[in-house]
Image: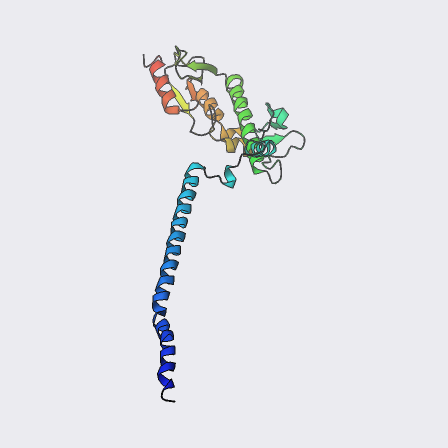
Length: 247
């Protein structure tokens, strides 16, 4: 009825007000959420600062920085520093000799030099070759003294204890001869009396040493022979300064 309509509308008005107030309530809830978010963000920032401080205080440790155990250390040392191989000190002990033609041959089989002593071990084979070369150097020294009749002389003649010094090979009349011939080897592993170690080992003494030149010089009356070892320029200067002809 008409009289009841205002009453119903009046009863429904609070609900409309409540609906109108929903945004205000949402804003209040949003403010509360913002407050919580602000708290959460501040906690995260504090946690980050704490984590940074811990990183500063605690040194970084990588797997590679971990100290090795005794067994690991021993294994690494063995791998890094293998024991140096031991080699003979004479040609016969190496199983080689020079035949009448000056060729290096194996004592048992009379075969030429063989570089590969151990399969798949290039380092050992190279070390074996170099050790044999040192023994051959001493053998050449003996040939210079006993075959070519040269005298081994230390230089400088009046060397002091703190000075660099070496030696040469000279003929007996080197200090008085009118003619002087000086033989100087090249750089590298070769020493007095040698031209090339490779030729000595793989070919013969005549092609790899200075012996033929020394013997020929005697035939043509060039009686002074010098063979300098290592640092030829320095030793040549010392020879010149101490030679009788220069003085």
